[in-house]
Image (cartoon, rainbow, N blue to C red):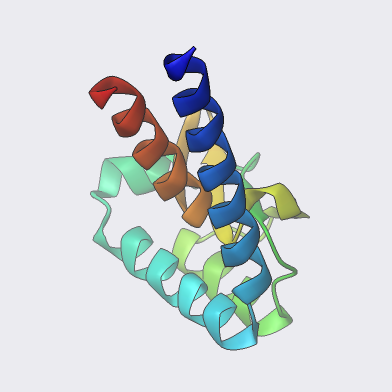
Length: 122
């Protein structure tokens, strides 16, 4: 019974953290996320960047990207045919996927990692 209570408590804590962080997202935070994501793109090895630069690339974000942000991402990826998609469930995040490869940064990813670590420790 205590294991069930612990499991429910963890689920509620992570759901609450996800909601709070989603509510805190604003323009400044979103701009910073794009900047961090661009930095990660720039740090990729050439072969990894090439794998993500195909004509079928999709950038998914928790928020609508401004035309300037889209332009910066297209320039870094060196592709004009990128599709942009908004998925609020990402909880303040952005990801690029193409050819079975993915580069992602999101608060949701951090929460999932924390939840997995908490489950292993229990």
